[in-house]
Image (cartoon, rainbow, N blue to C red):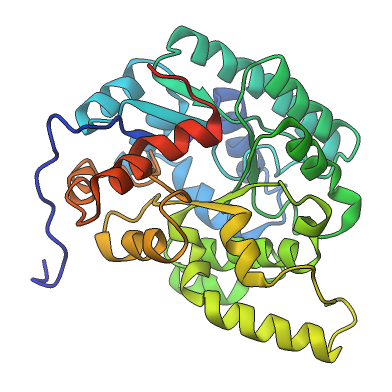
Length: 357
């Protein structure tokens, strides 16, 4: 390994904080079986999904281990959490979740998945909380399922796995979901999907379609489309979570703000109107960020320093990136003690309304 690669210091065995991991994937067996079926029958016209999941429903050692872990709500997952020093996990439906299917099918699957997730959480309430799945294109029942998940099942927000069949949600006809989230005072986690069919082709020849790069491109694009469409002017208290240190948006903060302000003020594009606030403000005040998949101090610290200590949360990205040693690297970050506690514990407790455990 290159000597430039960051070292992994030992994990703190007795930290003055709990570690709450906030982007941890779960899939029920019936949805995983549907993925296998759709791939075998070549029913899904989504090259990104087919490229990624053809491997992960396969029979390699890595794929089998991933299948076992992502379906677990019991001892497999809890054992891995214990081995990593993770006290609690925020569970959500792994990408693309139900969003691979037509609106009615997706709503039915989301309802089943939310019930199963709530049952699993009830067995280990000191270790898990969860986010509700829904069908984004089902404009009538999607918001209702989010509300049911929160008010009846005790889930703590919603999971939006990127685009849905190539559709992004900046069209106002889909905004009932965000209206419901604001009214319920819960966040929406905008999690990656492989790039949409209209975007993915240049990523595929070198396997850049998923976590290497494609995830960040597609998810960052989705977040900016929502912001530029004026979603936070309509719903000023809405909170959206971005993983992977913000899908690169915090590093582009200055340029996004400068160029969006210029485009909006000059009328260069008919769909870009001036907003009530600057892009800079929305990306700080209406977003939270997590460290999922980034076990390296500099980018995590960059977000903490430039977005705010109250906006950045810890995540592992289990089981997609299950590297126990990364926990030690983040334990050892050179930041103030209160900022580190906010990162690992306090921000997640506040945003997801997690009581002391």
